[in-house]
Length: 413
Length: 189
Image (cartoon, rainbow over all chains, first blue to last red; front, top):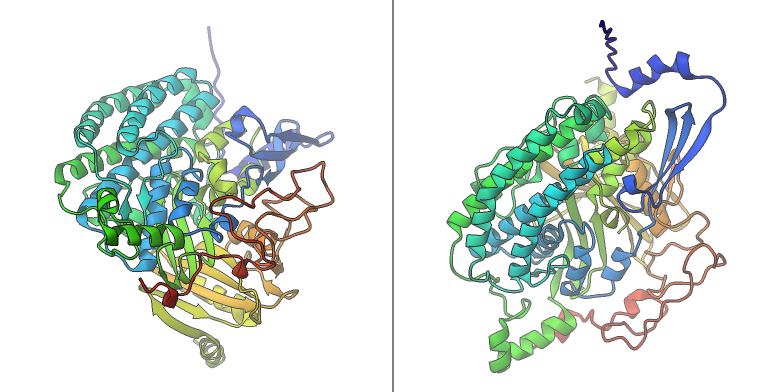
């Protein structure tokens, strides 16, 4: 039996469009609406696509179906009261959001955290990163047909959830940080749990890699699909694995280190072509690097205080509130009036699983922000869709959406 | 650099007001008619990454709105904030021709605060629905919301708020509504 193979090379989306245009530009255009409630849109994203046959000629991305007005709410509450709202931004990595928000307010207050708090937060961020990437990976694989991946990654996420529950008392809505530190110190057995998880997780990652890296269907559906050149990615303000998949090595942890990330030994993986497969590969490698960071953090966890020493603006320890007069008064003031922030404005960006989560805080002094702007990575990452989708076929849409790995809770705020 | 170009850049630098540094961050303020020119020059100088665009409503001040651009020079690892002010009803030049990512940020600023951007390719609402009449992040927009004339499209009745433990008292402007925002001198304890 003889077979013939035709090789088609499409360098970028523009070339794909040009290649396909003469054969396909016939007949009427069709407008196809995807979402806001559709399995491949991971939440409530709506896409309005103009189709010529199966090829997308124009795309309009419609966001805002999950808008809760978080920024308005923030202007009406004290700094600490907003922490639970940050859980609901990227709800796949609530711990990382808590940390990013607390670090932003602490920058405004001018605090330098004690070493134990910093290392605790690094563990929080990296656990959240692994957990979010695992879900992104499972959902992405499911979107392109590899159903079982989702079940395997959820088994691992479950272990992380158990650790998070041990640490914060909640599995999803953690609200772990406060201005100046955390709600509580590490519970006994937590560090051992993180170590145990990290050590067994590397083997699991190898298994996941074996299932997907050279899986014919997976590679066919992701290789050279959704190519974002590095310059375009930066121009659109893409961050996180989406930017690094395109070959730009911008990672806030390396470029503007916070929480002592400069003292950890880890590498920033980058892709080459910026297609869906590269973004997937970057996430896989990032999880490996996170494990590396976790093991270093567990090994060097220092003792000492885990809250900043500023009694008038930081919540005092609970046992002292219940037994000492002065701490009780401070607790009352911090809870009712909020930490007394100085007037001024700061921007703080943290490397979250989805990209750079930034908080712009505009304070006029006192316990309430004058303006709090959330720079949501998913919002910026989705901005590229309108120019990325044209030239692709409808069947590429789930692969592209899955590889961009967005969360609407964060995008719409 | 030719003499004319040098003159132009000296003139541009003279128009920029350098604000005092706070927490290690530098901020510049520029009149809005020179904004586009400055942003173009900054991008050429290496500020290739536009991190964020924010609109702030300083209700009661004139000009009322402040537009804040967070820029980043990745090669030099430098952060810069550029601010410009605009009054109600006036528009600010759009920087979406300089960074494509500004497109959505400016749509959001228009949607939430109601600042118009001239030269924007597609200035539509982005988070609220088309036809929504208000700009929710303005300080004179109450937290409980305002009713709109499109009851079938979305939940537009006033939200029941009063009586909650952490709810502000009703007042027309949000800066009068915040009982917990006490000035520092009241916090003597």
